[in-house]
Length: 497
Image (cartoon, rainbow, N blue to C red; front, side, top):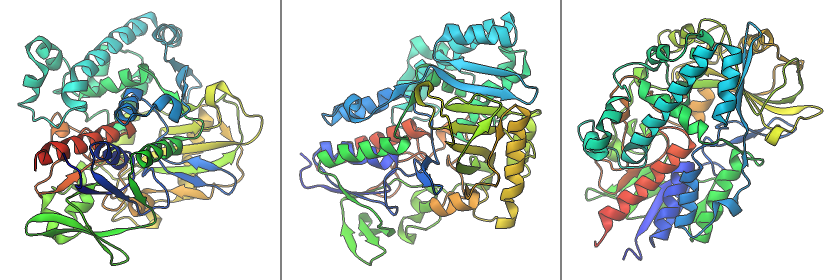
């Protein structure tokens, strides 16, 4: 039994919240410490003076992750949170005026692609989906939901029967190159190549293995009427029922050690809290940079500038649009997609014709607002928030560039001025110390990137990691899995002690 064992979780993002629940279920005394006034981490909301608007992740997938978390704590995800299944995954527009919807129903998507491009591309879509599903099936339990394997140990986990499927995930070729096998229409390569950005990466540099993200969406996307903040709130409520203690508006200034082991944390109030283990659920690079104390600095490998994932510039506003019938999720593409990633990862700048993502948050379950509506508008940016100056991100010029791409696709924003709530890589770096503004931690460039992420266990006895910057990677479901893996590692390591 672990009765009386104490754990402190630093950070109330998805990973930290999941760790806290699982440890509490295993009879640990758990305290979650969060610098913000609310839980969620990157699942944050901002107020534009009129409404609360989701300003972070907006796509809710892999529902099974949360169902299992709640069930393990004798809770019910279905009763804890309202989640509406989406019929349309996303609406896509191009600067030539063309438009394509993808659906949760494969047959509907196939028919739309045949009408949009060609029957050959529709057949390519069939093959692409089969490969995406195979990649997902072979890696879900052996990699994503398991403690981090090495490249050498993964084949053993997969087993001989699935070894051909593992080889067929094609980690040795890029996603962009692999898409040539399935699609001849360059617009479809843009659309499906964009899945690389879900893990903060370039489709020209990440492995083809990541086409599995397409299957994740096709398994189901849900819209949360209360926004992603409602998911964080539901996880906190679950934790409270398990006797987790939450301390908000409280900052950890150091994670402390004594006699070679973790001893607890020191707060910004100079208060010291003792614990058997500490789980750091922020950007793990903050540990490597010494932001949590010199004694634990060497326990995490620092992230190099060339390894950083994407950042973003976001605008949150309440306004009206015209000329393009928005869905909940919308993407606007311009020409020369590769140039966007060359600018970000080579020149550390933002292209003048960026891809634009728009989340129209009032369009849940097909609802169409009759007046102003809440929008999150996002473009990709380099993670240079630790070295950039405000002049490196001309918000007015970037707003003009983003809305111009939307206008060329037929969507005109009627806001007379640039919205007041803007966040750039400098702002994200301030919100998430150690990140340099990256929203994803490290990029997934190259076939070995997935094996080089930090794992739940560190070199420092008693210090564990959770969150989207460690294995299995970024995204709310993956961060939640990381939290469960951290709890699993702790329970295993302290069993019988």
